[in-house]
Image (cartoon, helix red, strand yellow):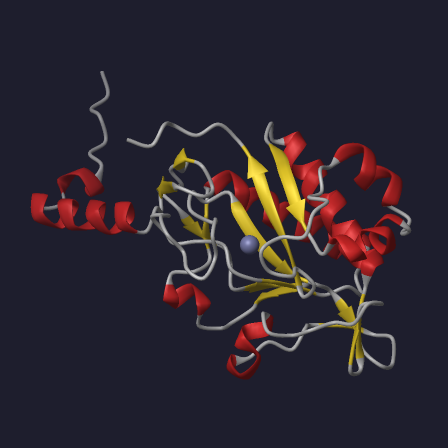
Length: 239
Ligand SMILES: [Zn+2]
């Protein structure tokens, strides 16, 4: 009988093995699935994963956000967000997107947001077009509180920028389709109710109205520069 081939990894010194294991666990490198507890307004998260800083057609609202522990989500939500951007990169190459805040690696209170506590909430900054009609990233920097202080008018305009409702509708549809494919869903979308007719007038309006739930009343802060998405998946009770 042939001898078993020794595996060098298993012959490493125990201390090196333990150190490596701790590093991998700390970075969630095994891709362990996240576990959420409680609800979006009072909850926590285990094995949270950071959204990627950027991709071919998207960036985070801040280069430093990931180092500030503000862009973590449930692993399934990360998969959905990534898949939706990838689908859009293939089908709508000219569109660029910016995402906003999501939550802490371990969830919990996330001021100034009232929710975002269990890895299932993500803010997306509105996709915009510039004066030339080109899809560009929303300008986000410390002076406009990373985009959150921007104010758009009734028609979705701000200086040389206008909200690209068509791109936003395509993004929401991509998120919804990806979420459903993965056996989760979208609980609700919060966006300024005054803009909903403009969103529903796009080519994806019928899909959005029949497949997704939008909050119809005004939220505690105006959601004109971003739309908030709560994903739906079962969480364990918060003890
Ligand atoms: Zn939010």
